[in-house]
Image 1 (tube, rainbow, N blue to C red):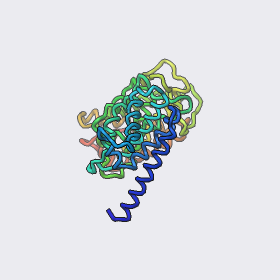
Image 2: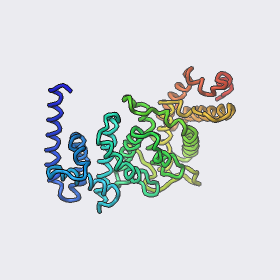
Image 3: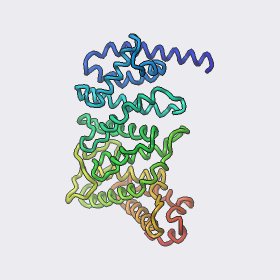
Image 4: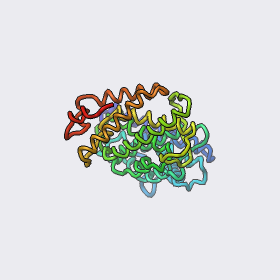
Amino acid sequence: MPPILLLEVLGTTKAAEKLFDLVDSFAESAKRKAAVWPLLIILLILCPEITHTISKDTVEDSKANKKLFLDNLRKALAGQGGSKQLMESAAIACVKLCKASTYINWEDHSTIFLLVQSIVMDLKALLFNPAKPFWRGTGSQNADVELMVDCFVSCFRINPHNNQHFKVCLASSSPSTFHFVLVNSLHRIIINSHLDWWPKIDEVYCYSGELRFMFSDTLNRVIQGTGTHAPLRMTPSLTFIGKKTTSLKFKEKATEQDTRSYKCLLLALVKLIHADPKLMLHNPVKQASEIQSSTAELITGLVQLVSLNTTTQLSQEAMEALLVLHQPETIELWNPDAPIETFWDIRY
């Protein structure tokens, strides 16, 4: 490392440590701790040598507050902090830790990876618990969803094969918020994959069948809902079914809130098809006739959305997805055994 760069790094580390001590001394009550923990974890990440030092059993007095901070963070994340505020703050801080770790190459053997391993299971258990969805109160849902997406994407980049949270989000019995988090996480993985060590989306191609089912099921709900509800404009501010555990299985009656939720999910699914059609066309173990049938169902569904005049944004995105599906290299994936015949056989 060039001397001038080394001095800059050392200067940043020293300043980060001083700021950590200053902020930590301010955080006396549980309320104050909850307010500053996300900042403290960032400051600690900027001090790799200190992070390494406090990973040991015994540390010098000047570093004891940092070790205590991590211990308290772990306890709060596991629900042992005695305060809901602290648990929620610990979740935010730990997601920031996981996200930061993905920008470090595992070959660097950073101590941060050991910290991540010590908290990631409790973090996923807190954020991806369908029996008790993470919820910080009225008005926090968009922020909660974004936190879950950050966690999902970071966990995928840390270890794409440790996918228990993926299966939880994919389950039809999970809340609709979980489905939305899953689809948006996959979309982010596809469009933002610029570091060499980040795994690619093909790691989850094996779940294409479940994603196609989610698309078809959600499409049917939206089409049924448009017959009884006024047109709904898609906006970034999302309203989901919330804390209730709601299955994707059909109900006798769908409320307006249900319909809005499914429209948001459907839009996210169509954007996912647009971003990487291979994810929905992957059929490694099916017979040629089954592959053709699933491709036809996918394309027919998108065509239905194009003619759905109650949601312009959804119709426009469906057209974009159809254009991508009709690229020559993508048509070959409609049915690899007979792409041309499949192309001419599909009518819509």
